[in-house]
Image (tube, rainbow, N blue to C red; front, side, top):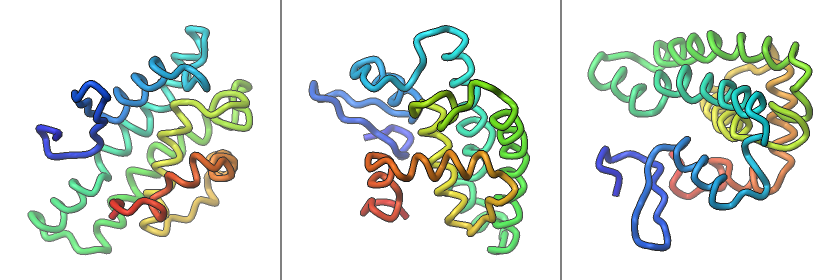
Length: 168
């Protein structure tokens, strides 16, 4: 379905499909605007996108399963090396993300205010990836608080990897 052989793929009612996580999420937000995943104001939208992109563009490309598989299969990286690689790239961005979220008055119960946003969707998925490597989150209390608030929402909790039959 995806020419690149990757997930996600969104199959639409008209039989067409769409790929790429952020494109799908923004399309869903535009097609089904309630609840909104992007704020109405331009500054808020820019902030939410910047937070989302920190995770989606700075961590995920270096730590997705395809990259980790390449490290192991093609470069001979053992599990210890892969874990160190993962932790390094997560920490590089999570340290900055934590500082940003902790100091910014626009941070609320979630990454931006009192409702989950595009940034929260990205953050939630990345924290679950961290759990795969048993990463200690104590250095990032704001991120942990936001993750726990998201995990208390049934729609987020039920979408977590342990509840998805195709998650590996």
